[in-house]
Image 1 (cartoon, one colour):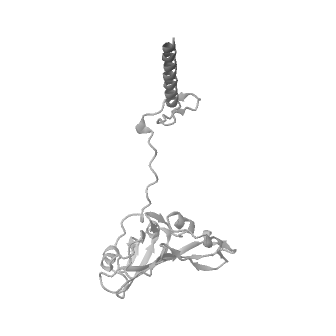
Image 2 (cartoon, rainbow, N blue to C red):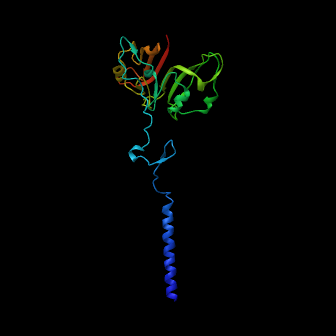
Image 3 (tube, rainbow, N blue to C red):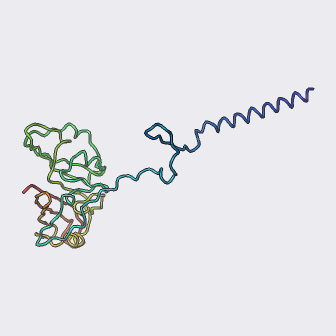
Length: 241
């Protein structure tokens, strides 16, 4: 009798363990979920095949321009509004270079900037540092053309500069008209064509933006006047004709 009791207890224990194991699988907490959708009439429909349920691709990275920029003719670059954007980490931030847009593209935010106010007619050049050592920065020149004070977060700029204090500039993922920090002088001239003014370590082009009736100036500095010298500063200024 005792042996039969022992066998019965063992069987009960095995069944209990089996039920526990089945219960752990039944809740499906660790199993892949099969989604389902409901039609507008409230009837549940079977999920689509896996290849149709893959997440939609994210928005494509905005391009720095509307297309390849044609080299200058007689020192003048004719471009589109899309071309005069500044590109930060692959994201194009168009003129008027809003501070919120620049920060969204990856320019480090600074809470101290949020409280800056521009009175009517005020200009303010914001120093937006790109690195911890503050060797590389973007400087949009904001202007308040309205009649009342506004936050710098709402201000607009028609001039933007990228500049560095580094002796040997390196690409920081930032570009204006395709020009990045450290790009050799020879490559710049090959890309943009002959400038309207060339003083060795300083070159300048006239800018025409016919699709928005703007014009302006692009100029840049190099670390020295040799063809291998790298870009240390790029300044783009445009304004309505």
